[in-house]
Length: 187
Image (cartoon, rainbow, N blue to C red; front, side):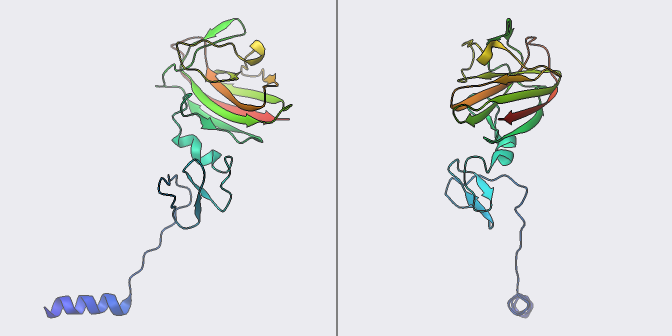
């Protein structure tokens, strides 16, 4: 008994505290609550600072997204980039683009644009990239915006309709897998 009394007295008198740094992590906030210094946004994601707009969590969202039509990676409406790999991914989107049927392993990103904005899509690595007005999973085969695709060293410039546009990192060869770097520039 005296030993537990001594431990309790040491804890009470010495004090205990807990300090955590949640920066750099990704957290959901289904209950509307986030760790200290983070704010819950409309997508139920904890974001840094008080800016809870849809673009504030683009960098945090990307690693959490499944990169499919139902759960695309987010690119800020001002533009930005993403990198990843299609190794081990599925072919979830198929499109007719530039005379090719794009039915390889893919990754899906969403960007929201205003009317009259031009989108420049650049891709590095062994993949291609194209833009869809709406993301429809297979077996649908929509035509890509502008009937063109970006390849390494040959960026794509399109002017999609206002609202969401979907940029698909894909290939015509279903067996082709590789890493990629996607860059979107909005003018």
